[in-house]
Length: 108
Image 1 (spheres, rainbow, N blue to C red):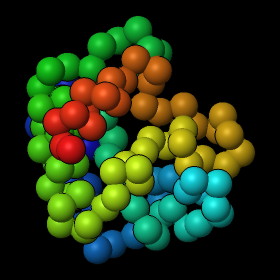
Image 2: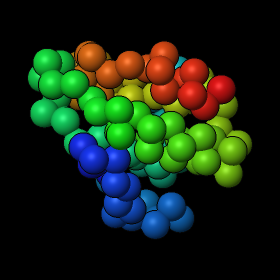
Image 3: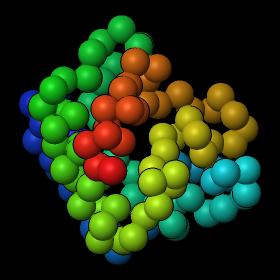
């Protein structure tokens, strides 16, 4: 979990299964998202009106960059809950104002 001040909390060990995603698919293929991913919660009210903080982007960029390298995650598999949740629309996070290009630019 990445707090508003950028502090990172690890709630579940990377090797443990967390029930963070529910039923899902990746790139249109049904998959066990919970068993094959690491979920990162970004503290935000989810309204799309509350900005994600610079500290959150900085910490998230470092964290995702590390996880991408450590687990050899392809860039196109770095997605949000809303991208994998089935049925579509079941989850809407991160909020619409999350800057995916800022994150991807920082970890590419």
